[in-house]
Image (cartoon, rainbow, N blue to C red; front, top):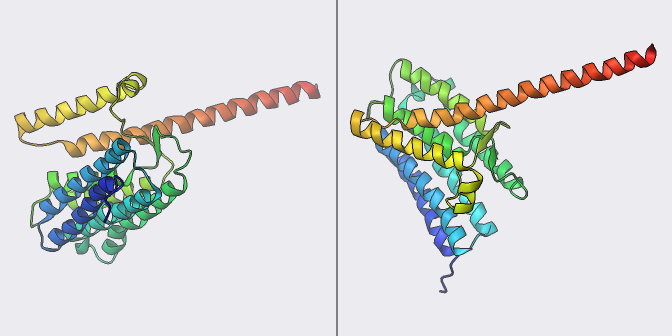
Length: 258
């Protein structure tokens, strides 16, 4: 059997799928922290398969479709099952419906992305990327949960709200910055993106060393909220521009009547 260079990124995509499957197994056994970390590992493999495809120049339609199927498993089905096991199974019957949101809306988001793949704005995602949704949920569980016990009290209600918000953002038209590829050209084009990423990594490292806690969830929520804030500002600007345009148009009509 001939092994081509297109196999290289597919290996990482396959590891992504395996991580999603392992997360479901660990979550079913009540090992919630391990299940969350395995989903984060899947996100690492997900980023590596794209990097390998670019390095080997082996991007293909097959790779795109396989990557989407892997993402549905690792960042849709696995987080859905994890949040159900951690807390939402205790709030039936709504728990099942809410727990299904990441996999259902995540699949819709990926289908929309694949349709718009040609000619899309490479600097922004249209809607929250599904891996970001999954990592944010996992980071919340790791920071506020109790392994083998799940979430209790206010933390459970917060998880419920978080799952609904992130799932809806995936199918929204809120723009989110893509993760920049590390190159001299891109660093000159978007220097502030690299500064923010390095600052975030520094905060995570310092928090782990000084406080023995990784504030990954807080960093991800800043990313989520920034996209929402920017969308709100653009929406308000659009309303003002429309209102000003209508006022100018009405003024011109009035002068004609006179």
